Image (cartoon, rainbow, N blue to C red; front, side, top):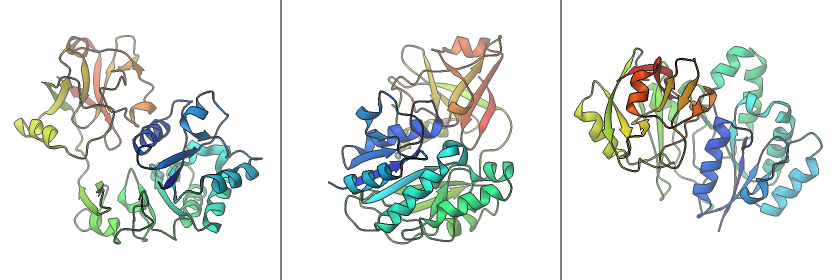
Length: 317
């Protein structure tokens, strides 16, 4: 069995990227040996999750030992400047060690434009530095815009065999028809075929929600097969399906998380209890988990849908 080292924030504390990485590690564990290198102080749950807090200032020897012990076939980095902070030098050192050992690296940039706008010059230099470690395999992709994708082609590295798929230039695909901000979908099949599809971002305005009963929900993972959801969307293209369990509990929409603003101003969202996909954008809203019904949404002072492309967008029933 091949090995993979995920480099990412990891709970605790609560963090959208960290929550995504935890789900990714759990999903991959059956196919590959997975270890996690994370910033921050050690937590009681680290050992059970294969988490190693080795990105501190004085952890150089521990980083080298981790790579030598795990011998990963690839290093997969989830990156945003704020997610690492003081651990940035440790990340830099870990990636240099990986490159010296000939280990393939894939980096996912999470919303780099926001960091670049907040830290002109400095942020761009940091992103270029991190991206430079991926040159032996492919490049980096982003969650907010296709324009930040380097000219290097994107190749999947989460392979059980030490092989790389055909080259694909995501930026060329996305820019063919969409010169501005766009939605980019990357499909990787078990056979390691890669395809890209682009589309316009969601439009502004208020989203109209239409309740649809789906017993048990869709579960905690994102589905590549969206035929069921797309069928519900085609029933009324002017609305967005709002998934509701058989017990009347609100779950999520076909494309976003659900947030309700109570009369006291507190934001609430359905609990991540295994029936819904925990949203990475949702984690940044500060919404508290609470069971919600359709009656709760109708009585709320505000209802929103939350996703990486939409942010927090107003909605109505």
